[in-house]
Image (tube, rainbow, N blue to C red; front, side, top):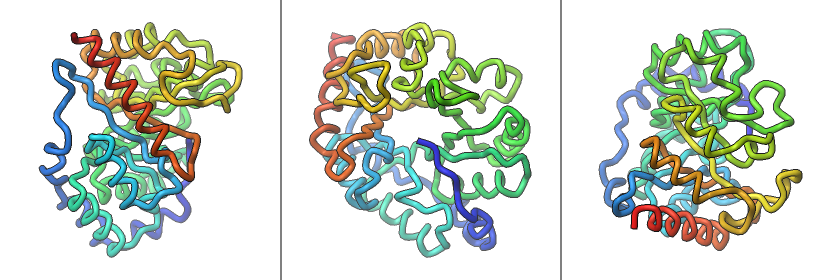
Length: 285
């Protein structure tokens, strides 16, 4: 789901905020929360839009319950206008929970000007994000690439289905990024891409090294974007999709984005994780 940072300039005003982000290193304790699935290179994580109605602390606690340290953070859990004290509190919560911040967003970058884009990168750096999931325009991509190089923070374009006139599928971004820095890639939302008619297995192969991140969900009806369900209960080809990820040696994160049951997503997220782990285990058995 896209969102537009309000008054990102507020975030940039405090120089100490940016320096705090630059100095912070993600806690090594995150590595001990759960080992990689035996024999599988796939790393499961959560997109914290799934827990948008939960606090940051409860989000991190749920990640621990699910057995993953990997969290792709949403602005619900660190506001774009956070001041230096709130960033410090966020960093402490991450360290205390043994969480690995794998990225963040979706961050809308549609204004073709340096200031708002640099503000977004300062936000990402302060949050400890190695990658920012973005909703850009064709016109803003060259400017975004400039800041990717300056900050050494990757960006991954998020597709939003047939309603998205720019990037309905992940592969639709390829003509616009093929000549850009390798750190400009795609966050493939498999539900939105499937609704756009994409063959998910073929799309993974087409994206190749430009596939930097994933938002995973399931649907019971590809013609109805509201038919989101527990992963494994729908019609998306989860097993062939995950097999293809392993075949292309995907090294990003497989982030569950569970968009329903916002008030209490735990049960559905546990069931989704159980299915995804089961599929991965079966693929390497």
